Amino acid sequence: MPAKIPATVITGFLGAGKTTLIRHMLTHAKGKRIALIINEFGDLGVDGDILKGCGDSACRDEDIMELSNGCICCTVAEDFIPTMEALLARPDKPDHIVIETSGLALPQPLIRAFNWPAISTQVTVDGVVTVVDGRAVTEGRFAHDEAAVSAARDADDSIDHETPLSELFEDQLACADMIVVNKADLLSETELALTMDALKTGARPSVQVVSSAMGVLPVDVLLGMGIGAESDMEARHEVHHHHHDDEDDHDDEDEDDHHHHDHDEFESFVVTLPEITDPKAFSAKVSAIIAEHDILRLKGFAAVTGKPMRLTIQAVGPRIDSYFDQPFGTGPRETRLVVIGQTGLDRAAIETALAA
Ligand SMILES: Nc1nc2c(ncn2[C@@H]2O[C@H](COP(=O)(O)OP(=O)(O)OP(=O)(O)O)[C@@H](O)[C@H]2O)c(=O)[nH]1
Image 1: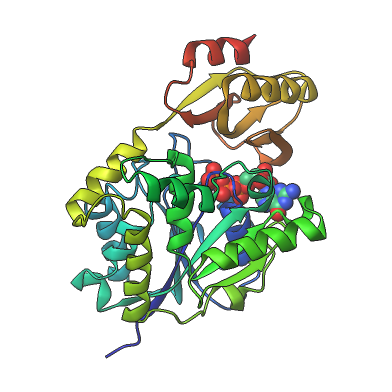
Image 2: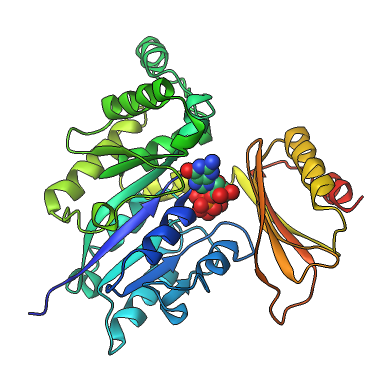
């Protein structure tokens, strides 16, 4: 039997730094051929675009496969499995497969899909890497106080104290074989140490917790964890159930209902604008709009008058980043931004404010 191809799943909340980490990995995995499957929330393939054309890469553009933008947990059967099968049917097989889940995905159904016969005979899960925005965690953006929650639960089983945000975050952590506390550059040494300790305390004993800035980690640390064993799959499963143990004993179907529900909590839309003239002023305005409308994530590309390069705009919560990344291709010179938030965003007001 030929050796199975190892697959690494990269998960983590919106804007944690998954794409940044993968980009670093692809440009430092010399000699390996990596195939990449991307599932992004929102209708604009920003991540795929950033990863394609990143020059000296272990992944050729044709080895980057983007899943249609549905939620990966709900479309595993229709989308992910056929994509994997197509990849595995190619004559030139990759050395490693990397899957980037959307920041809003619950990774569990995806991980279970590796047990499908057509896949399990050829691919093994090497590890699940959960990327965490160290700054957001330190600021308590996903906070929920573990002790307070369990005390309240003990007092009254029927109370659901978790917001969808913290629940998603915990599910992503529960699946991890390795937790990467990213954005270490935005933390003091003490903050970083405290955050890492807190994550270690909450994780299974075998889980490694490492830190990074801009996703810089040795490729061998990320790929080649060699944790495909059934026992670990079981462990992940159990931790997952543990987090929902307020709802008795549910089977897989219940879980599917459950995350359908989670995904109704979020929405996204794309705003298309003409060229912008003043990137600084535009960034400042975008920041203000994000704060006013409680937008979780905004990203895309802007056309700036007089500049041949397109301006990549990335905002995660209150932080906004912009940089010129590559020339406009053949596409129209326009500004396209994807806006992601919890359901109830005032789309009309956001569009008007951005266009003003
Ligand atoms: N300061 C700092 N910024 C970072 C770091 N890692 C990523 N970023 C920035 O954070 C923003 C989001 O990074 P991405 O890599 O796109 O995050 P992601 O997890 O792929 O985002 P989604 O795909 O939208 O969920 C970008 O502006 C990055 O440049 C880091 O370690 N430090």
